[in-house]
Amino acid sequence: MNLGRAESEPQMDFQRQQLNYKQPSFYQQVRSTTESYQGGRRKLGGGGSMGKLFIIQLDGRIYSCRNCRSHLAKSEELVSRSFHCRNGKAYLFNSVVNVSVGPLEDRQMTTGRHTVADIYCNCCQQVVGWKYEAAYEKSQKYKEGKYILERGKMIDVDSSNDFFVESHPALSDPEDGG
Image (cartoon, rainbow, N blue to C red):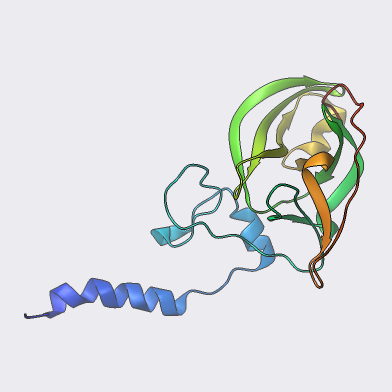
């Protein structure tokens, strides 16, 4: 069998790309959570897409999915603990990882109308919160581009020693909002 230059060149290009691939920084990974890397090597936030699932592992104090323990956010990204959802408390974050973003929809919340998209854990596909895309009230514009994680759907973890803090969120808050 003759493996001429034309037949072996694509394989060598792929190998070169693999060798030159560098692990993105945490913030590059966060920005790429709902996007695909060039070349189809890494798919994050693909939802139902086929391919190998890559999960980002965070260090330090983090919040993880209560269902599957997949890492969702670093504690340093926490903006506020004073939000509420149908199932109780919710936290506002600047960025999250290992989630897929669903379709946009307008929702009336206690603080006014917002355009939001549910976010799903990439491992177990459970809805873990939502992303604020747009706020119609001027005083709520600070939420745009930020994420809500429902407290009842996550746990606190110190990933340096895998210690997690079990908490029991209040289940009495009747409305979305924040």
